[in-house]
Image 1 (tube, rainbow, N blue to C red):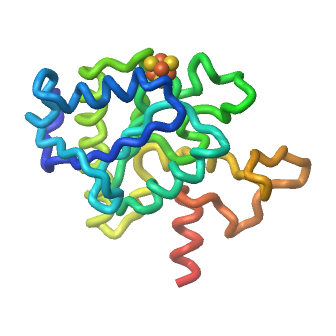
Image 2: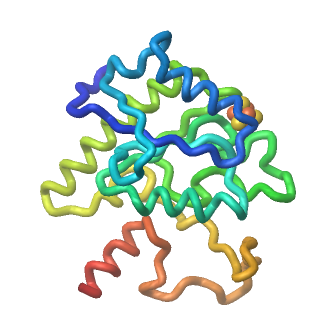
Length: 197
Ligand code: SF4
């Protein structure tokens, strides 16, 4: 570990649509055996208290709004870790009829932590990496900058939008978003919001 951790990271965990294998490993990382607490990691159920969002499983039409709601309730600076290959890309369920994809279809992801299932050591490594990104975001904010220019949000494509029926709306020609319609969680949306103030 070459990053000197400057804070005790508070994490919140949400299971998208995993088989529960990765959930068990995330929880195992918090037990005395693997001891994420040695890095000051605190598990919280309140998004407003959390610095790091640990998401397991893929995203579907039902959990996508929940993932976005938790993310939007977290305060900046914040980081997202996709835990396990399902959360990274959809994994073995990627082509299933009800799977939209990995977590980055819903929100920007800062750290991709693969594995099937993810190992507790990988979870801890990912949290430590996320702490480094948190510090970068905090430094940008202290300088008056936008934390969305750091980490996964800097290159995020905005993910997918659900139609009125709750399913992914098929893309149509000429559907390119207009200026000011940038997806939440992207630097363009942040800049548009500042311009409207
Ligand atoms: S990555 Fe493997 S263990 Fe984790 S949720 Fe997917 S299928 Fe289950």
